[in-house]
Image (cartoon, rainbow, N blue to C red; front, side, top):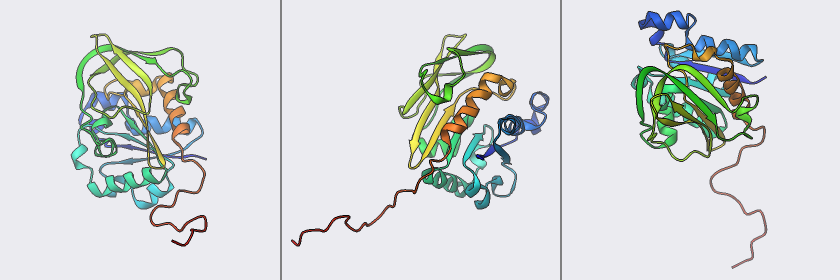
Length: 240
C-alpha cells in the first residue's frame, strides 16, 4: 500500500472562520480523507507539531508527500527542508499544491524565485489538459472548470517543466502553467495550482482524481538506487 503524508501549515484554519467552515477538518484532513477512500494509507502533518510533523520516522515511511502552505513559509525550519529534499533525491514523491509554490522546499528544488501574478476576485478557472496521454490526467476530460478560484498568472518563475500537464485560463484573461512535473534525483515532483483556502476546490471530484493519479505517478520506483561517488571499474583496465 502506498503511504502518503499530507502536510499543511494549518494556519488559515485557525485564523479564518470562512476557511474553518469550508474545511472543518483542515485542508490536510479533507485531502487525506479522499486519499484514504482511494485506498492509500494517508496520514497528516502540520507546522506546529514537533519537527513540523515530519520526523525521520515519518519521512522514511512516506512514499509520497503532499505540501500545502501559504502564511508561514518562513517558519518551516531549514533542517526539515533539507531532510525533505534528501528524501526526494532518494526517491520519495512530492506533490506541491497551490500556494506551496512559494514554500522553501519547492524553491529549493526549483532553484528559482517561483514568483507569479495573483488576484482574488472569485473568477472562473478552466484547467486545460495539454498532455492528454499523461497518467496524471487519466479519467479527466479535455478540461476542468472551477466556478471560483484565486487567479495565478504568468510569468511563473520556474524552470521549464519536464512535462506540462495542465494550462489554466482565468476569467480575467490570464493564463498559467498549472500542472508541472519534474524529476529531481531519484524522485518525482508535481506542482498542481488549484486549491485556494476559501474555496471548496479539494471537494471537486476531478481535482481529487488528479491528485490521486499524481500520487500513483509520483510513488517511488521499486529498484536499487544508483551508487554515487568513487567507483571501481566494471571491466579490466589495460595497464598504462
